[in-house]
Image (cartoon, rainbow, N blue to C red; front, side):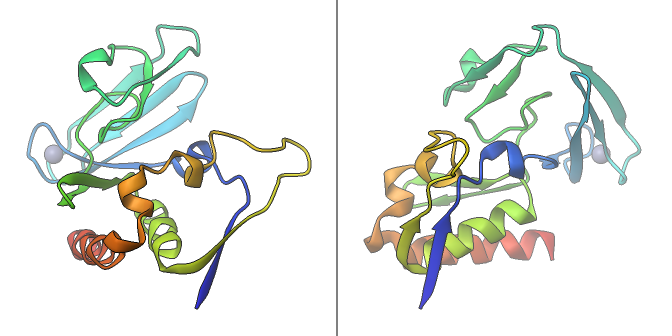
Length: 163
Ligand SMILES: [Zn+2]
């Protein structure tokens, strides 16, 4: 039995790279933050590449509804990358919802989480409890024990798309 330790690992730690569906050729492409309010999209399949610049001075929007996302603003909470808002490559239907991940590290983290029979939380000694921790932000359906095998199967499907 695994033990999952929620040590305050946040979405910011994991979102260093986004696998997205290229809007030009529909294959898997990458969005990567570059620091200084910039990010870059690049697709090795069709060669499309573009830059992104923050136009809202570091203000971040949290929303699950894509309609609220704005061009030029870092927007978090829907199955798209934070910058260009291109659809994530890693998404699949599960339990009537959409299970999604930004990249393989995120998938690995989710798999560890759902496999954990016993869930422990460790309080970060410096920052205390953070509502930005990945575990605290997971939707209820994903944490529910009765959905565990369905979620594991959905994660397996996502792994095959990047194998
Ligand atoms: Zn492409």
